[in-house]
Image (cartoon, rainbow, N blue to C red; front, side, top):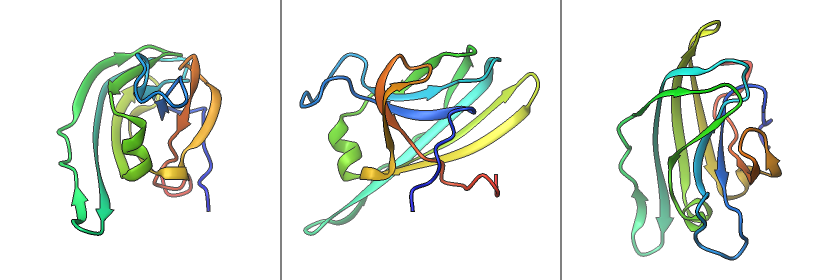
Length: 142
């Protein structure tokens, strides 16, 4: 079952502009802020794993949270640069913490495995095509 993608609250998108090209200048992992207010005190951490017959399960090192001071309203911020192949072969997860002036402190979690993300030709706040990563926690639990 595919998780519903909500583009009205902050979300993570993976951008790749040129099909067949392993690297483009704008590709990477982005935190997108569709809100009418800035995201403050943002922290993002990520990790992942893949399975290989000869190696078993190989886990990436979970990164320390990367602090991002502010993401203005209606903008996005690239916080990591990876190749599309990594997303095709790995299970990747992200943890997100931020606050806003009106909503206070918020947390969220996202996860992507191959076809779990939803391709959009024009990702809001990103200004181009990309895969929007589904939330790991259903809306009714968040």
